[in-house]
Amino acid sequence: MSLYRLARPLLFRLDAERAHELGLRAVETVWRLGLNPLLAARPAALPVRVFGIDFPNPVGLAAGLDKNAAHIDALAALGFGFLEVGTITPRPQPGNPKPRMFRLPDRLAVINRLGFNNLGVEALVRNIERSRYQGVLGINIGKNKDTPNERAVEDYRLCLERVYPLASYLTINISSPNTQGLRDLQEEVTLARFVGTLREDQELLAARHRARKPMLLKIAPDLTPAEMDGIAEVLLKSGIDGLICSNTTVDRHAITGHPLANEAGGLSGRPLLARANVVLCGMRERLGTRLPIIGVGGITEGADAVAKFEAGASLVQCYSGMIYRGPELIGECVQALRGAGIGR
Image (cartoon, rainbow, N blue to C red; front, top):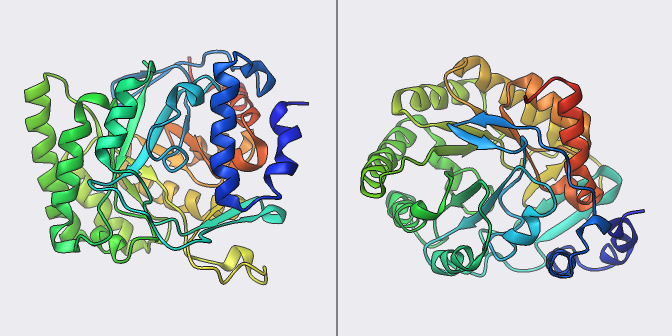
């Protein structure tokens, strides 16, 4: 039995956010003591090349678990093919009032309304510069809560410039349901202006640093077909490098009747899988083979990772599934993808 399976009952007696913090500290301690095999066996390599980047395997860590990039060495040692840190904002912010994170163990789900709580972009930069990690690192950027939407692009531009030299790729997060009005930036006309400005900055930074870093957009799963049409058109015209499908959902149909169903925030975990895959499949149909997509949302077992690829993903990411399954989920997903003939 893995160390995580032994620790999970104790962690689940704690408030979800407190357990999250202690879990990260425990992963860090285990790594520093050289005891990672007690958590999970590191998966054998399953190389893939996406966005012009070589990934040791196609299973990554989704943004949100390590917002401040404080544990990237320890997390990488679990066997992820890549890590995505953040969401980070220009200035530190505490996020929404607590409690703001809730487990639904009978549904393998989580509801959170954290609200981009983070220590600010300068803290993230310091943490990355102190780390020894040399693998693929995505950095997910957002805006401060008190920055109005009409000035939101300024926050993204500031973060983009500051983290660009440290990132393997950059993710523009306009899809969290926990920052009021953020998802309004997904509207087609607004999105076109917004992405256009960031694309200009991306090319200027590529020239300055003599290295072009891919830029991805992370979208919500709560989109109508017409909204997906508009987003796809913007993406194809803008020259952006890829897409992440998807963030958490505000829809509660999958947990109707649950005692926590009325808690505000984004729902993730197993109940998100079907909705996230519908958007993933819909965006793949609209984009064709022109843009790679990272599939995230609802992966709790290896078969779910395979389903993401069948729906059109080129890479996958996990987060909430790790809360219930622990690090062994990584190897299970890699092995399932290997069995499905993915990778080389």
